[in-house]
Length: 254
Image 1: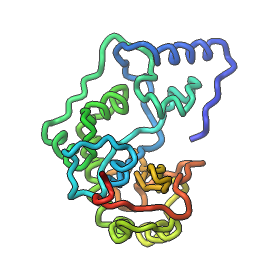
Image 2: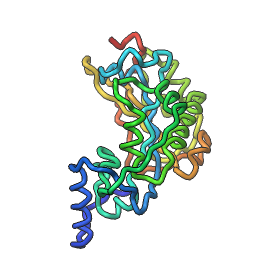
Image 3: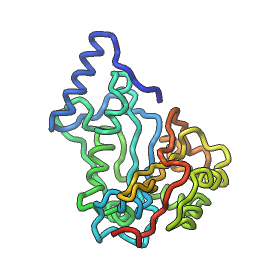
């Protein structure tokens, strides 16, 4: 997806102002007139790393998991991109960045799906299921329950890959980014640019800590994961981890 720029047409510029005004208005979201988007980001947490760096996890976080699910995030809808909304604002605000409507979209998520999500995510004391639905799905023509179940399936399939095995074998060690992507290419020899990226943050000891593996998947073929055709190419998307980074275990988390 190209980085959007503000349009020069006065009418289109006024449309952008209306969108930006909606960022500050705590009102209901409307469904967008065109909800097509280019890719999903499936955010898979390295849970000990996330909890170590964020220091937000409660004891309810399941320590039997190393690789969890943070969320499934649609990329910026084309209607907002065409209106000139900067992609960064969509990433930060999600559906809070859409024009104001009279009613919120219903986001029915089954109790079974909610429980499955909570079992594999970090517990930070807030309702992450409701947050995911409200921020990332409420303004799009998507079935929230089906969408979250698709993300849960991607996580389950990811756990069977060489890449996941490589991560589990590196617990408590410093590993190299090059070795990680070598493992990724054993699973997918020709995954596209931006299809797999690593996210790291610094802990209090200034170590680079893995917090997330992000997969860019095609909305039309996400159900085909782990087949190669499920991936999407995202220009300019790069990992934030340095050449070597640390994979903490739960014993490293206070």
